[in-house]
Length: 123
Length: 445
Image (cartoon, rainbow over all chains, first blue to last red; front, side, top):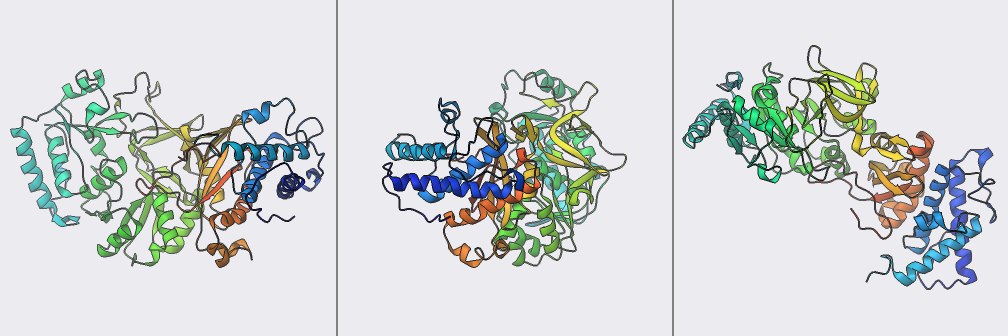
């Protein structure tokens, strides 16, 4: 999958931005699958769940996967994005319920950073 | 009389190389210093602050003070404890008239601990002289490693060379200039010297032994040093501010990382995965760690180091305080580092605990890229990669390291947060700093 860097610009929730976020997630799926055995590959399907009874990743694999997503996001957008803070884990609608939800959450975090700056709003 | 084994110091030959000085000069300087201290009413039980430098005059003063039965501290004691109301351990020891030494632990904890040693017991280690060698004084003399290097060498009739600085070029130039035979250093120094190519710049053929004991080393590091210095013994030793330096021998088990006590010398045992020692050189106790008893009921010193049996030897895994707790699993940073440092493209690795909301902690890893082995990364790496920016380095190396470690470590020990940096070694201390890694919104360590 193409992982050329996008110019840093406004993330406005456009189809392009959503597509970029999903590409990041799918790139991470390809990378985590290199670590997983053949019979436990993570399907590169937008509805694939990351948590719950139908999820295939165990907790350590999920943590690795999310770190890989963060790494790809940083590479693509040249800014550090954190997916694994308390808010993410305690959200009512978990951002980890599917790959699509994760891509949406990634975009959300990217927008927050754009508004607040990387230091959480400090000048 | 203090019991200080002054008569064991050699009286002939050279004892210092930078600048040159003889054993006779050391003795004369010691006599003069003792006279000055007597005039100042320094006697048995007196506590005195002696700032140490790596030169003959400082060691002459130290020996003179110990001959008088003084208790020497290398740092101002008032920074560490209430000197107007010293703890009973110190008062009782001062009353005994024995010479003493107060060392401080390195600042891995918030407040350094003051460690009281009986200098006579500490020096008993050197009553039977070891091999007489030209030795480089790498660690500062107020550090147990540097003090041991100096005492071992001086009592054995060897001679000391102090480098201008701890930069690899200055250290290895000193080895060449003075035909140094023994080089006690830290693993971090060796990594830095290898990374910068310093080993190729100097004639190191005089070296017979390279030893390190300040932190665990990885097998790949030992292998690299052995390749560079094929005629040289490369050995791991063991010591601590609290235990002193043990009489140990490096052994081949565990890729040369293990050591075992000399027969008839210090006693070691493993309890709950931790090293305990019983040795003449152990400290008497802490002076400023209320309620902390480092000794077991049967008199063994709890070192706080995690250790594993390795054939006939022991292999240090790291300090208990540095263990990374990943969802209840204990991970030794040294195990992770040893694997990561075998990964093509990685020169050095430092593992640390990275806070994580799900697992408590995960393993974080900082890596220093190898300048010499990029080609092993594949066609995307090599010279082209060296010329690209830091982000491209990360793009290529991080997934590679992640996969390499994942395949060789238990899943809980595989690094999650991986950073590439040009320089991970603290040049000042030449020890790995296992502080937390950089995350969004937090200050770099």
